[in-house]
Image (cartoon, rainbow, N blue to C red):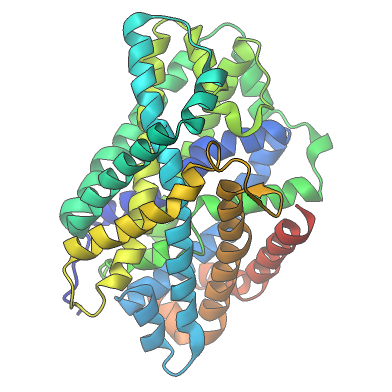
Length: 442
């Protein structure tokens, strides 16, 4: 048995893993993707893709991590000695570092909005949130200080370790996330005209049922589970061998779907009730939602709660990405967790500075017609993550013998055979489809 730090309970692991998956993808990206792609049909395809494709790959990552009981690079080296599978770990390291570099920028925006929401709550003054958002992202000092504050918050949690840091934070943040969302859902659904938003989510407009919507829904399911960046491999390496990885993966996927749907049920009923359009795109959270809450009784308080839960979701994802990097940095045990955490957090902050300034001082600099922020997002989501997930699926489906994977899964023959077919054949085909679509047709 490994002497490494471990999660103290199954629920601690599930909440931490769910926190890694439930981030900006579920609360920020899912609503605007659904809003711009027909609502109900996109949501239906997203749920199906999460269950059919995302869940089996998630199980594969749990299997690799729990079996290895080491950081991603060492785990692949020991499970496949003499073969280059350890490159999956390096892909995860690079992807997590780059994602966190711009993720921390968005985390900083959220911190800025929390401060503005508190001011709005106290004064009751009307705010032009479109102009506010533009002012925040263009102000170099505000974005850098906010980014630094977000990285510091993430760092303090990770340096405390698995039990005292990540598990404890997740046990507090994830339940509060659900509670806050339910409170906001109750308020949103009781608005006059809110039923139109519910219909938008659950009554299909079959004209949107096409290949493009399927690819987009598959991509959303894929990325919302944090697949392909070694985060789940890292977390599951701290999991006891006694835990059932299939049940844990089902719980994580279920929580991810639930939060995504709750996000929609908070946003769309309010948007329709107040006469806004659901097709606002990425600005839906930072511009449209504050404008919605501004017109609701106790809107300032609700706006503060909304951005607080968005911060929780962002932090739980950020600590997973930093943990991947830190776990690799301390694999030889020659450096303390605290020292390595500070070093890598500083490096990632510096890497994120160009992204933070890409809407202000560096707004004139573009790469392939993309801002620096958008280019880093594109490289990670369109290239590194699909490659990492594809290789992970192939490793689990072809490197492991059926005897090994059966022993790790501890499930019924029917469930195992379905999983085996998906990770060996169906998932690789779907991942390649996402990759080709994003790289050549987006």
